[in-house]
Amino acid sequence: ASDFSSRIVIHARQNPAESDRNVTCCYVAAANKWLIAYQHEYSIAQGRVSTIACYYHPASLTTLNAGNNWPIPAIGIQAFTNPDLGGTTAGNTSPRAILAYQFDDTNSMANTDHSDIWVTQIDANTEQFLSGGYAAGSAVGSMWDRENPSVNQVAGTNDGWIVAYQERR
Image (cartoon, rainbow, N blue to C red):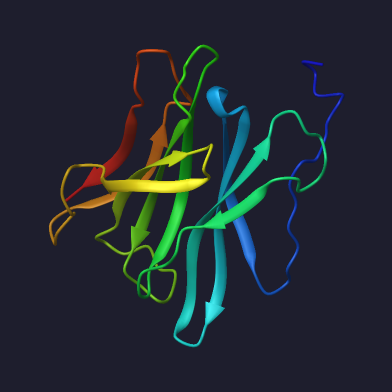
């Protein structure tokens, strides 16, 4: 029902040593899957870090945690935050979604003054992160700060995605 009176929980995680937040979701029509991405925070010996995890749920199933959950591997000590997903509409034959997220080189979860935005495509059929790149085409360097990415939720049959973000010097 459109009034949300028939809710079904399809994904849940509980671990008191970890924290999941900033959840986003999209639907990929050609793969018939819901994708749920979230910021996954945890502690290691060097400090508190976070990555982005993506859960792939078959749209035809209403069973809790029936899909697979894959994190983006952290490279060194970084904080991956603020994910946003874009999917596809019915009629689009591509099994791909797009994921944009903010990252900072820090072991304290601090929002640095040189954050950047990374964008990667996801193959929802194979449940793999594909090659990605900087949202602006190159690294932020020492003069810019890019934060809070936002992706349009669906790409039509011939359209792409738009990634917007906040940028300042």
